[in-house]
Length: 121
Image 1: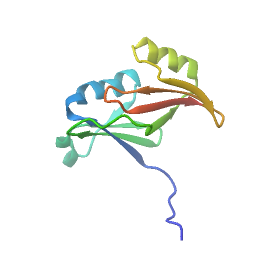
Image 2: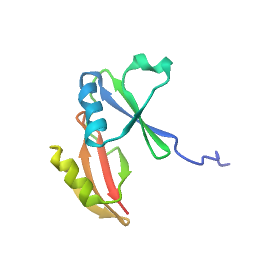
Image 3: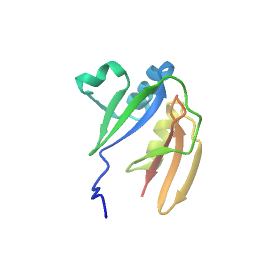
């Protein structure tokens, strides 16, 4: 029996409390995501929520850093070369570039080490 899942509502990543300010500045400034208000009952937990299209990305806080991994979120862009140039101009290092399944892409890491894929179909 299928659960009847129709769409992903949001994705949550975690950053260590000590890197909260740097990570949120990265998502606001480098990626230019639109921040949305968190529900009142969750604001004291820190972090932030962002909206892009119909998807929300929640940045939550952990007490300590997690090890680097291949887990990631993928943001699609209209112009991959322009996105790459903008990100590099802000001092972010491109970790890897490739094409897979018709998706041209590159990977970066936020200040907390979370892996982010930027791609164009």
